[in-house]
Image (cartoon, rainbow, N blue to C red; front, side):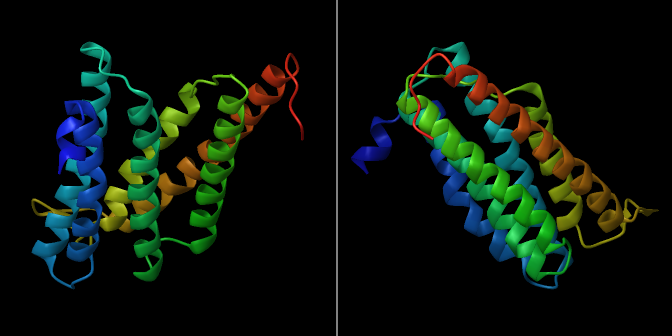
Length: 192
């Protein structure tokens, strides 16, 4: 427990995001509207907490190396876990998830390599926008009902359109990240 108490508030929020992911999964599986709404609520809460911990870290100068590593891992754990469950629930195509996860693994590997060489390649606007689209798409794909306050919406259709858009953004932002790495690595010795 000493490990958790030593963390600053921003890192505690990030760490708690990871711990809450299994709850999202547990409530997503039953064929029960209320359980699914609870799962969606937890997913939204975890997604919003990502903004909160980043805001707190910047505002109160709580940025740490631990937080820089943990924050993107927490995002990937959340998104990848829920998308894998959505494949099993037949709400998203496996090939789309494979593209998104592959891109994220490639960017993580490049991020590790570049940081080992002293390079910092900031996440661009496309990557951040991609994440927002992914979160919204996943929210729609998690929602089993097609009515909200008595109004018909085709949640799976909307979620599918948004996941296609976010997959395009994922590939494009990954390309931009790789290009930035190649451009930056010209000035240093990088073994390929």
